[in-house]
Length: 319
Image (spheres, rainbow, N blue to C red):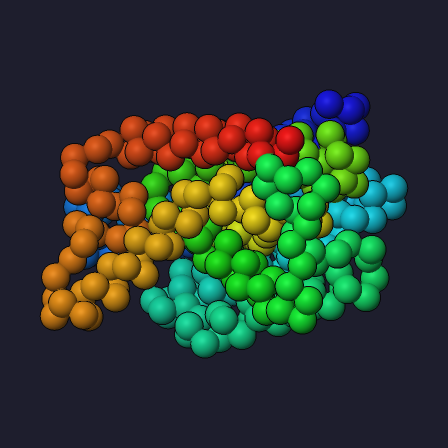
């Protein structure tokens, strides 16, 4: 990897590791404690009161690091925008829930409206101010692209919103969303450097930020990322996928996101269709494994290893 990439990782990690011990007490002072659902796994009740909104630490590290390189790497701007945009939607949702004590936070329609607005600006910027095509690289077919013409924009909305909310559903165990997305960030960093994609400072900054955040988020977590972090990470992954013209690869490297959000959709649909029966003991999928007797660290390790293997498979698909 280049010196710039290594520098971005180290700087972002340093910011995250340095500000973590400052931010966590501040969040406790604000009384930003997580409220655990009573219908969730019983083991999670002991987590009630753990500070949330820790995703601010990730955003701070990624933004501060990326701004050091944005003049020479203008392509990181739309990725940074999508990351911060979704992060701000999550931050507002978290703030309303834990500081204003409105348990529902933003209404589903308010949250969707914010996500649609951020995605729309991202799509407009890509088409108006960059030379990045919305055509998608086809796995295993080097130099071949899939172009849906006018349907490229609706597909972009579907991919971005699906990825962001998949990452949001993945954030349910200590270190899970951070560890899975770390693997994805490393994958996109390798691709960006190898193809001169021009976004390696932000992908490496995200990797460094997550390494630092995991110091405080692995089991037992001292802080949770909240929607601030999980939505931001989903926006980051979707943004990288589009700037590298690799949205098709998101389903591969983000297979855990896909599995998590699919488990919720299937559970709800089957519950309604069957009159109250369930496919899983609980959704999202990680809670099903918990209720089967698996420990949090074991589930996190399994999902992270699966993601790492899928990232390697995606590298093979590039040939």
